[in-house]
Image (tube, rainbow, N blue to C red):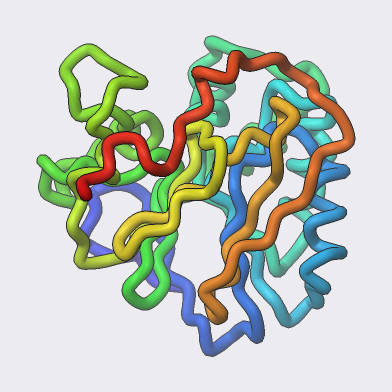
Length: 230
C-alpha cells in the first residue's frame, strides 16, 4: 500500500489484485451484530476485503466490538470518520475504548483508493482541488449551500469525477448509486439497513438491524433523488 500525493491528508492505496471480492460498507456506528450478519450474507472469506467508510463508533450498542473486529481482521480496513475524529479531539467519549484503540483510530487514513475509486467518509468537495481538502472537508462535506447541512444541492449532485467516490456520513433512505458517487450510510443504527457495495459486481447488498438504537426523524433520511439533476 502506497501513499498518494494527490491529497495532503493520509491516503492509502489498495491493489485489488491482492483480493478476491471487495466490499465497501456503510457506517456501522457500533452495530457489530449487523456487521457480522452482513459478512455472513456476503460469504466473506479471508481472501475478500471489506472497506468501511468510517464511523465505526458511537450511537450503537457495541462500539468496542466493532473496533475490535476491524482491528483484528487482516481483511478489513476503514477510513476515519467524523465520529472517530470527535473521540480523538475529546468532544465525545466511549469509555470502553482503550488508549490503544484510540491510537489505532488516529492512524486510520482519510482516503482509501482503488483503481478509479475513492473511499472517504463524507465525500469530496467539487469546488476544491484534491490537495486543498482538509480533514474536516473529507469527514463533513454535504450541502453546497453556505451554512446549511441538509439543504440540496449536495456535493454528490455537483461532483463529476473522474473517480467514483464511495461515502457515508449522509444518512440515506436508500443507497445512492450514480456514475461518480455511491452513498452507503443507510442508517443501520437508526433502524434502517447496513449496506455494502460489491465492487467487482456493481451490486448492493443490505441487511436489517436487530433493533433501533437511536431515533431519527423520517425527514432526516435523505432520498437518493433529492437534488439530482434530471
